[in-house]
Length: 83
Image (tube, rainbow, N blue to C red; front, side, top):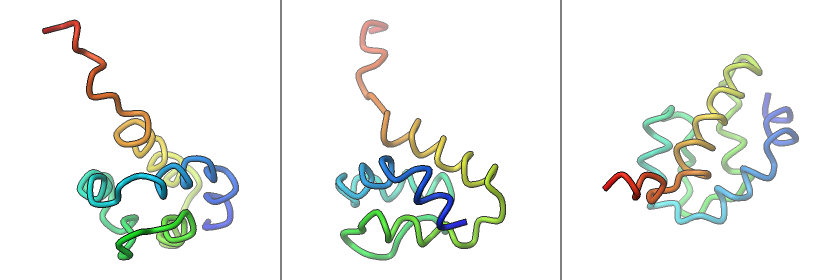
């Protein structure tokens, strides 16, 4: 599963690694606590290793979909015109 996630989502994992971990750690824990690395400055490899407990590709895809929506592609100003 780790190999699948790394090759399929390498770009997203590298984006996560470039982000401030302290700022995104809570959001990762909300998605699934066991995909959150223990390192203070995780690399893409640190993130992908946490996917070893995921059983199916569908489950991995769903988690990465949530990571992209809630963290990577999150825009806090998306609904600013609604104010």
